[in-house]
Each structure stands twice: as C-alpha cells, then as structure tokens.
Image (cartoon, rainbow, N blue to C red; front, side, top):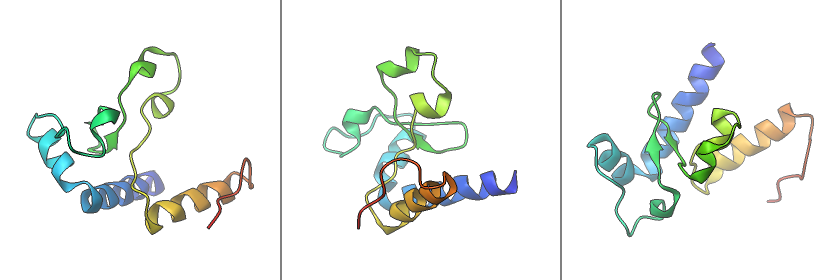
Amino acid sequence: EEYSAAQLMYYRLIQKQYFPAEIQALEAGKTVAKDSKLSKLSPFLDEGRILRVRGRIQLSELAYESKHPIILPKCHASLRIVRHVHHMQKHAGEAVKT
C-alpha cells in the first residue's frame, strides 16, 4: 500500500514539473489549451490527481489502468519507470533502448 502511494506521488511530481499549465486548467474545471501537446489526448485528473488519457476505449471492458493510461513526459524519470517495470516483469516484451 505504501509502495503504491509512493508511485502515485512520483507520477504527480513528474507531471507537475512537465505539465503545470494543463494540470492547473483541469483543476480549475477548464479544458486543456488547444496548443498543448496533450490536447488530443483529452486528459483528465483522476481521483488521485493523476493526469490520464480519456478516449473511446473508456467504453471497453478493460481494466481502468488500461482504458486510462497515465500521461508521462519523455524524460529520464519516465525512462526509469519503464525500465523498473520491465525488470519487475522479468524482462517481458521488448527491451527499452537508450
């Protein structure tokens, strides 16, 4: 439980650093600006204040995390997350290239 809470905090910190205007707009009940890189993803803040993708797939029967993936920027922190998950999944799937 503490590990999950720490993960969410880490995601929030990364998102706050890279997407402050988008988060501020969504917290104010507005939509993301059209010139934002995220505008085509129809982003929203979930109940944990995590920025996620909204789309047509939300009508599917997939798990919540699959229907609404977390939005992370292309940065070193995100790469570390991907590498960690890859390692935890016993190197399943394609390896992350540097």
